[in-house]
Image (tube, rainbow, N blue to C red; front, side, top):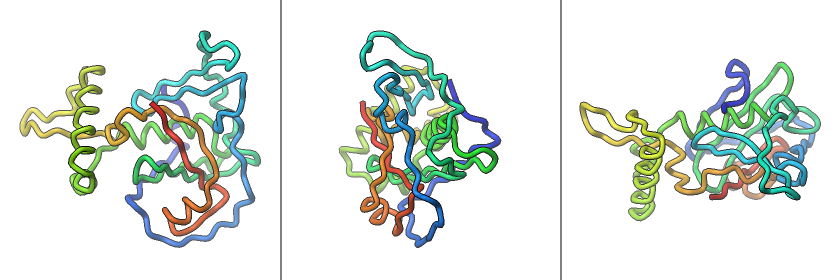
Amino acid sequence: MLLGNGRRVLTMALFYPQQTCTFSVHHSNCIPILTHSLGSFHLVFNLSTGQTGGFNEAKRDEDLEFTQKHEPATIPRVSQLIIITKHSPWVTMVNNEQSGVTLGDVCAALWAQYSELYITDAEFATLPPRWQEQVKRAAQNAQSFNSWSLYYSPQTQQQKFRRTDWLRDKVFFDGLELDDDYAASRLGFKAPNVFTMSLCS
């Protein structure tokens, strides 16, 4: 299922952004669900399908419903989170001016960023040939699994790749962490509301 209120969530993609910014945000810590440090609930979130759930570390065979979507994503609350990852060139900005960014906002923004937007020709051209083939296979597998016809235009038969295809098999959320060195090398600045996302297969 998809989470978050679409009217409160804003996503923005920046392809290898080069900018310098300063923030006056107090240091924020992601709550344990987003860092996968909460034993009683390990978040399982598929960026390709938008499905969410979880499990208890002590009872891995029991699926749990993700009922914490309205909880704040950070302590203290912030109105904006910036999420980057070493697995893709895009930046996800999550905004909630009214009540602060929630867990549901984070999941909804990431799903929209990677599943509703497509890889441009210029972006695809930056990939090595082997990676391009892996992206194509990921798209074919996703199309076969979901039976989606929107991947192909009947007029041109030109294939379009979702951003989740860029991730290949690493489509599962694996936590957020503060990584100032990576943020500075990637964005040109570091800030207490910039988090790096890990992914797994």
